[in-house]
Length: 338
Image (cartoon, rainbow, N blue to C red; front, side, top):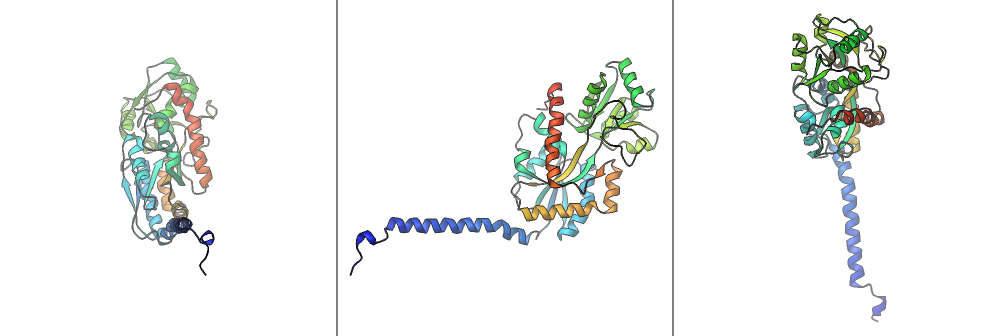
């Protein structure tokens, strides 16, 4: 006996069931794809983009940690310098890369936290487009003067600046750099006037401080060898705590400028969407690298402090705190690069 029409499944309902089943299978496949990819990763070399030029602090750190990362991950981690636009070129290339763990970024925190405040149009949003994987080092700035300046401590220096308003100049690696912002913080905290001279990198600025063309600067590390050679005077460190390398050198906070903190973090990032197991593996390889004495020696040689114990959440939170710390200053001085 033929089944009544009212009891037969309609062609429309059958089609809907097939489509639903198809979408469910596709969804499961898409969910499983990153997991399967993470299980086979890495099966080829990994690129570590450094968004500054060879020889700079970021480059030195990248080349220091990459050998141990390679050993831990079982594939070569190759440093690829992509400098330009205050780090933006390297960041842009990273966020455009496949989210598969084969492209990573080593950047200063300023490139992530500060650049969005000083560039009107960026092709990326660091908060959405990057995953902070692991902090590498806390980078400090050191207040150094040319030896010809008749000062021996911070208070002497402030008095000298106050007696010569607008006559002294300081240099930095460029607008919006950590040394530049430290210099502007110092001027406001000490209530002094001095001219900022931006350079294309720390090297040229250091050269002019040594020659006396500039009277002082906030050194991100390259000038410390000149301090040890007696060619620069080191007056203070712009960090909340004294440097273990120079325990007798006071902080600016100790020297009459309470709360002064111009530290920034350098760290490793991955494009947003990179599978969590891959992120965890990269983080473990960075931490392992920071436990090696040879790596610690290299980082401390830059005047920086390794940060192997910083949690991922603290690393994420640091960027928000850095933006909050510098945003009012950047607005006050009207700093815009483009």
